[in-house]
Length: 118
Image 1: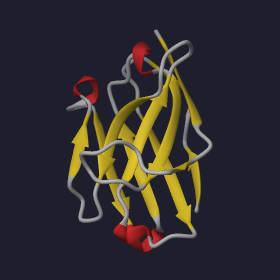
Image 2: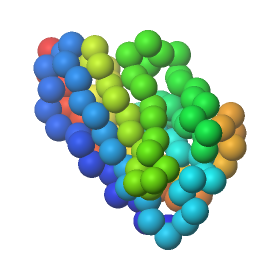
Image 3: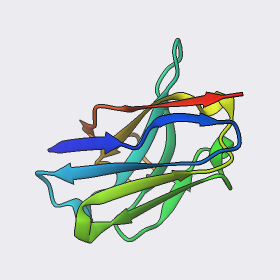
């Protein structure tokens, strides 16, 4: 399984970014996809997860600002991030596997850096 994340960059506080994660080597449509982030000096943390049918869950700090979605035909998961805050700055990783409300699955992408300037 390979996961290729992209879409990170530098954005001003209050701005938006959309991350993408293209998956290959697995039956994408059957798998939960997740987004995690890791800021310098901090542990990797859950951001959002989306089940095969589109059901989602979010960490409280991003609810109402971030939206996870997926296009099973394109084997791609997305994370639309709006109203970005400096504390959202991190390397964002996509993840595949596991259950919606469980911990991460076994497969990780390489990460994409999100920088938020104040």
